[in-house]
Image 1 (cartoon, rainbow, N blue to C red):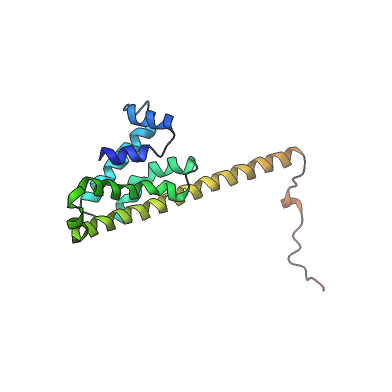
Image 2 (tube, rainbow, N blue to C red; image 1 turned 135 degrees about the vertical axis):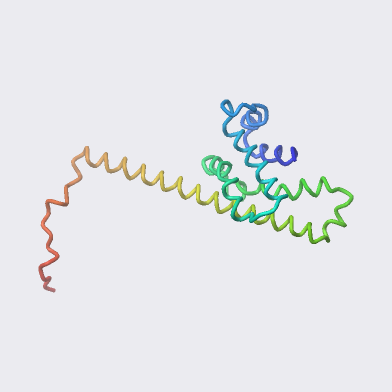
Length: 168
């Protein structure tokens, strides 16, 4: 499935593609190494037995983290998973009309779809976490700036009037 791997790597910038493709040392190329390992795991999961929805998130986590940080759109982030259908169809070639009608082919398509849905979930979780980190960072910076400008007061020193009756 080198074709699928090439298509996945081609979704990155040309410089990243060259790095991911040709540097096999996991220390010199940790992202590319994790991507390759994740793709191999996905293929094993796809062709093996087991609950795809339960196992796919773990295999997709690293690649989705990279895609979430690199501002891929959700469809672009997950789209590489659907590329696998095209690669398999190209490999099947002249046998494709016979395969399209088989229950095994339908099951394979369904497993790819399940992996893609899991990929979307993982991508969105990564994006949400990234956004929470950004919001917290802005909040902390704003608080520090306000504190330096003496615009922050300690509310523990203000008496609590909640026990008194309010008159309208």
